[in-house]
Image 1 (cartoon, rainbow over the protein chains, first blue to last red):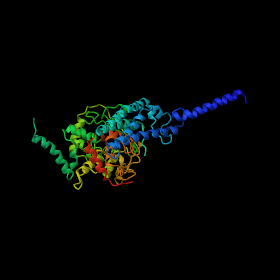
Image 2 (image 1 turned 90 degrees about the horizontal axis):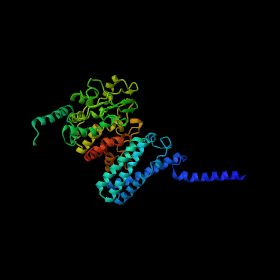
Image 3 (image 1 turned 120 degrees about the vertical axis):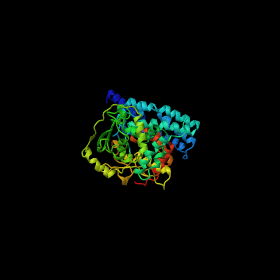
Image 4 (image 1 turned 180 degrees about the vertical axis):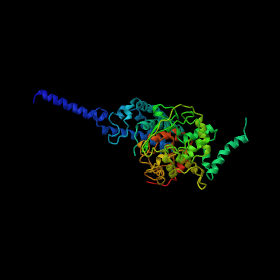
Length: 161
Length: 299
């Protein structure tokens, strides 16, 4: 085997390794597996929902402590800081496994992005409200955050059942 | 200045009530539990509770509020909602009080032709005269918009308007349902909000082949709802209903759209929460929950 071929093979295998490492972990590289990306998104949304649910449980006075609510609000805030391109990579619309994202989300990307960037300010308020400990304030902030989630769900999510 | 209403004002209020009461054996007291106010502000509340805005505005395409033009895709074809602004030419500006009540109560246009039940008069028929006239007062206080109605695009035989009287004979029971004196006022109020104003069953109950609400599957969910969406059941069933939801779960969903799992509803229900249930009083949301609790479970 000539040196040249060895070099090419080595380069290829390094590239393959790099791809395997970064392609998998970044989750949004062009050639990443769309099915995995959908699963990642569902995990992220679950985390968001889990956080919302914890705050809601506190608001409803159904067994969650203020500490649970604080953890929930932090989880919500953390997710809202993620770049929407990471969560909604192209090629992950309805049809890819059980994706519930309408193709319109990408057709109206500017609007979708605006919805997403509307999340962080309300999540910050939610976080601050939970830290204040005032149930009325928390309930209001929870309502505002739900509204921000709902606007995107209303336009860009298909009904699942 | 004037604390005591004049006799004329009192008569103006009582007269329509007496008429409604006479026509509907007993009359619905639950309807009177709406927040008090003048007819226009009372009508504004009815307008929200009845969720008129969503269907009668083409929000997505920048249409003016209440000027209609929204396409509603259904298994029977696509309906284009009409203009309900007070514009005399293209809206309902020439409708009399009697015209207005007849449309809701009997599903008839002022010229006597039958309305398609995409306008959910099988539910609205239960509204009281007072609520209808206050709703009209509110609608007529809104800006008139000149926007001609678009024809519906329906699949025969559903496009045949002359068949509608048959449909009405099968599925329309005109008039308010009297309160059940054996049940608490909140339950009666909840039933009025769910069945008459909120017209929840129009989406949450499946439809028969003829397009009527399937009474035997009342609120049991609809596999073929608006825009092809699956609509969940809201009876007391555990898995396919709200049997395992707390009262707080129900009222929080109606207020914010948040489900017990922390998801936020989208689609048509997202719109209902945004335009309607989030704007109700907390008492009214609690009344809806109190009533839904008692709907027999159906899986």
